[in-house]
Length: 241
Image (tube, rainbow, N blue to C red; front, top):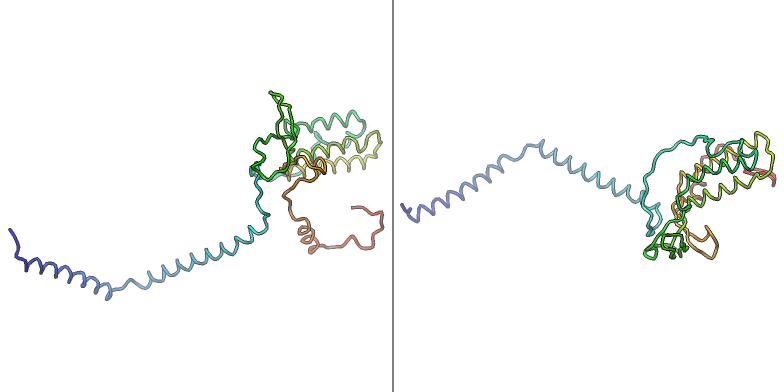
């Protein structure tokens, strides 16, 4: 059954009147004041978080040097307690050359299988210097390799421990202190684990390669600001660290 046109028009007017009534009701009955306070508080908290993040972010990034392209991944970090380890160093190891070599032989397990050299085929795509070339592979072809700094450092320390006291009788205190120093340095090298890649330079092995380091001047300044007693006052020229 069809409706007259005036009825359709009336229904449209009624709908519009209803919408206006609903709008009027919302104006007459606004949201409770506690809801306004809630949303205002949430907005203030969000703004405070954004401001805090923006304030902290420059402090955490400004101390980092410019990023260099490197094939070395970001390795995980872990807490490690330095303790004496007679497997790698002990005061009796300096009693004879044979005992020295026998103890330092255990250091081989601390280095990489290739004595610290790693193959980087696409080295030109990174911020690296010129590589060494090695043909110690299955095909006996030249391969671009770099020395990982931490393994070079271990080699240098092992060399000093091997040759520093060659055929020298040490007092027990000197032998004990020397073993302590060498092992402390060994663990420090492994703790820092400098993974800078050293290539061929005109300066020679280990020299001329860039390392990402802590700013030592900044560390020194920080320590000096908190010094209890300055020991460098009026010291003789023969004094050592």
